Each structure stands twice: as structure tokens, then as C-alpha cells.
Amino acid sequence: MEIEKIADSLKALGDPTRLQIIALLHQRECCVCELVPIFGISQPAISKHLYRLKSSGLVKETRKGQWVFYSLNREQFDVIGFSLSHLPDLSGKFQELEEKGLLVNCDA
Image 1 (spheres, helix red, strand yellow):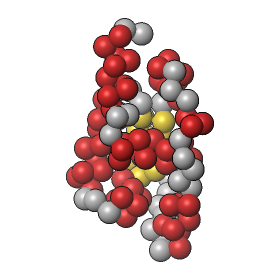
Image 2 (cartoon, rainbow, N blue to C red):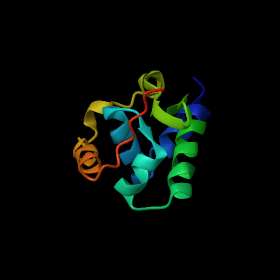
Image 3 (cartoon, one colour):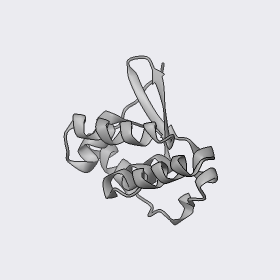
């Protein structure tokens, strides 16, 4: 992998919100509408963060019916040498969403 691509991936991880998104995606794939209440910022702001992560190759998207789900491109983390095991466990955020009835359930 070329040095510019590695540097771009590391720059994308340099933002605290994006790094937290990565920690959440380490637990499971997510829809934008699930991330909005977790971070308390607008949908366009979350989408912009996800676009940055996707453009650096760290995140992939998959369509399921009307929903777009984001997941980690784990191979990219192996290439840049970033260990996901050092990220904090933010799985409690998903529990909070479930309690509020905000988890997406897509059976497509």
C-alpha cells in the first residue's frame, strides 16, 4: 500500500467522532439513523463523517431494502496496522438505543 493511502486512513482516524464511529462499527454494522442519537449531531454531519471514513477505505456500505448500513473494512485496518482491540467498548450505546426503541431492525 502506498504511503499516501496509509496517511489518508490515519488522518481519517484522527477525528474523535470518527474514531468513536469506528469503535461502534467494531461492535456491529450501523445505519446513519442509529448514529444520530448516539452523537447528538445532525444526520448530514454523521453522513459527512461516514463519507470521510468510506473514502479512506476504512468503512464499507451495504444496502438492505431502504436502509444503508455501514461496516468496517477490516482488511484496511490490518494493512495500516491499527488494532481495533485498543478501542473502548461502546456497546452500551446500542443498549441505550434499544431502550429508546431507536435500533434499526431490517429484515430485508
